[in-house]
Figure (cartoon, rainbow, N blue to C red):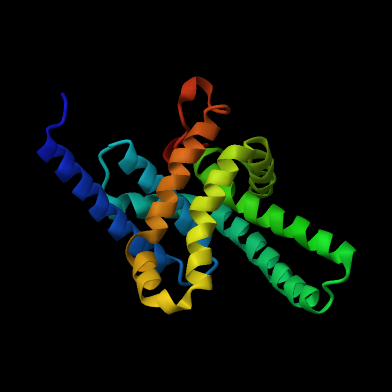
Length: 214
């Protein structure tokens, strides 16, 4: 049955409302920092359901996905937190030793590995069954193998963050963007792009949802 203009409008508004609710829940559950991984997995899972027009209860689905991914996603989060701490101190060192070419190359390698793999690590955790360290390794290999999609994900994810960081004079606008819809939009782009990537690894294009893993 085709949707009338009114039905399409209400469907869009329903999705938008769910995205806003998910955005707020996501930010709230990220507050302990180490829970960011589980929150990313839950947001990705719920956004994927809404984009597929599956029947979804936002709070229930988010809580369910959050619990299912908590232990492996938290392990992954801790690894990346350590990576960002290393990158931070690396950055401070490089600021005073910019002429050291070897350290500059090493810094760029660490930066690329962390930022590229981060684009895929939680979508992979949500979609496939594997050990956390294997998920991290596969996330970087996936980023390299599907480089055009990686560039798209990089732009969708990091460009809004860069604008927020580089233009503090529009803080009120960027703050409202991230509080109400920004994280959900990033997750939406991630779902749409990683869906194309994961088709290569899913038999008969059937995804393995967190509820059916194991």
